[in-house]
Length: 227
Ligand code: CA
Image 1: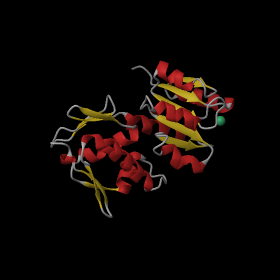
Image 2: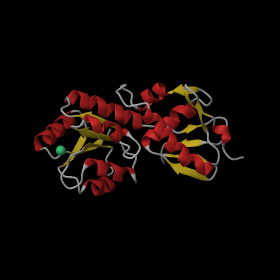
Image 3: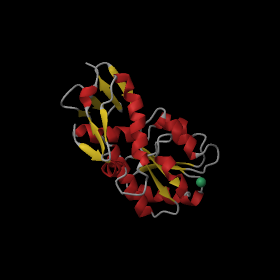
């Protein structure tokens, strides 16, 4: 089997070298860039399987890079940050990273997070059995009839979970666990903001297939699509 290809973007040479050596031993093919300005073009050209992206970088910072990558790619992005207070933003709507590690981190922890992110992002197509909704894992989009909308990885996983069991109510903590499986502290508002953004996207279908259940959570009611 071909090794998975990782891009590591880290300007501290010692850390970059340590990541490179460790991930090679873990069985990945690893490329390293030390500054930010060339990252987006590199990813476009090379389509790696995942990116480990430092936040503070010369050239262009990791936050800008992450946002630009999300405009054309749903590849797994693991952010490396020295600032805990950035975390909500990293995982939130405007950036859409898949996970983060706070520096200093252990290499063992990095390996575990990376495996989790890669596993979560290996997705399957889900079809709502009661109607024509289709969640397409290859195109990262939701389709109904001739209409489709593109989804971020987090939105995709959220819908995958809800649509997998139509009509069933999921609480916010249940959805949080699905999105960020190691139960770290990301506020409940994160789920709400993703749902809000999804609803905006789904307006093109007419109606709102995601129902809020007051005081409990959310459920997929796909039948509210256009007739
Ligand atoms: Ca840095």
